[in-house]
Image 1: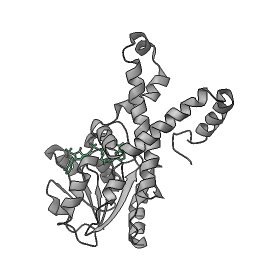
Image 2: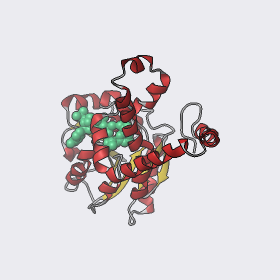
Image 3: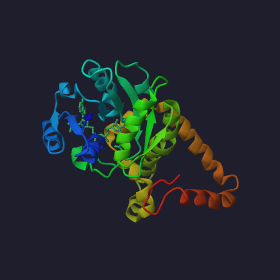
Image 4: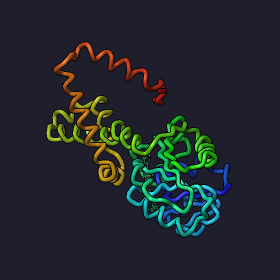
Length: 267
Ligand code: NAP
């Protein structure tokens, strides 16, 4: 099977490294340096999209704001039997247009605050969830093909509809990033606070170091759900007014049960 990857940053590079030696891999990226580095892992790497024309499956891992133009560009290149998936952190907007190939949206729930090919690594998806958002007319056999490749990267597949996906990731990823930035901003002018800050502040503000393009794109492409999630957080802050002492042990217990000792989500 021939697999294409477009956009060789953290996600695309990690897909490439995880699938190396398992498939024939054809990679397209923008910068000559990245293309050269990727050539050590791929059958062919180039800035020329036409190398993707015989691919059976293509992963698009360009920044969110370049996803639609990449999907459009593939329309005149790949066959109608080609399965194309994207990796964008927001799903509704990529699912809106009918494509002349078999498009299945997807989103790996794995990442770091780093970006670019040099930050990619083959173990990134191991034990992570990977959401697939099929269309109503997506064939089961095409979902199976995609699932098989994703499973080879040792990720666990979750099927969801794009609306529910965007609502859910706003709660656990996009809104927390915004809150993390806000927490940092609230403390930034207090020199003593910054000097005293230890692991709690470090953990609470890790997402403030997110990839800048991705942070901006998430706000742009998922604003309704992020606002809704923020409203929920503000409602939750009322905890202090209701039964704080009674609720805190319950929250602690539920949070403790969510992750294994090595940090994987076990729900
Ligand atoms: P990234 O590290 O910035 O990588 C994107 C790469 O795409 C760039 O490094 C660039 O590579 C290449 N590129 C940009 N425009 C292109 C174009 N027009 N054609 C071909 N290649 C192009 O970003 P990322 O974190 O991998 O994110 C990629 C996608 O994965 C996004 O949609 C994001 O929402 C999604 N995602 C990210 C995370 C995360 O935590 N980072 C998690 C899950 C999903 P060169 O310039 O070096 O060639």
